[in-house]
Image 1: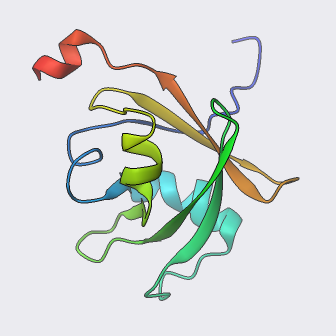
Image 2 (image 1 turned 60 degrees about the horizontal axis):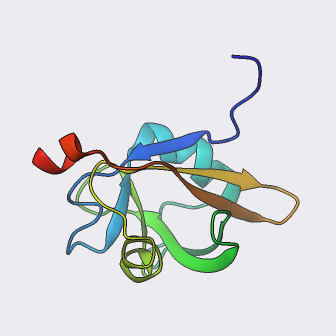
Length: 123
């Protein structure tokens, strides 16, 4: 690779990420160093932390809540995930999304990195 990929946090969405649970589940191994560390997040914060998210594809600002998911050792982005991302961007299981921290703007940038394929819909 000839360049440093800025999208450090990447996730291929699954049905629970785009369904009725209204949250994007992030594995602990990904969330702690790439999200919790830059936010200074304390896992004892029951309400979570509001985070600004800039959608670089549509040039629009959104807000999500980052918190530890109580039933697992994972973390989630929630609150407006379904309305502001899944529905607005027509995200489906199989889409790959990316986030990266922008230290100058003090926010996360978001992008749809890869669209879902027909094969993704059949699984």
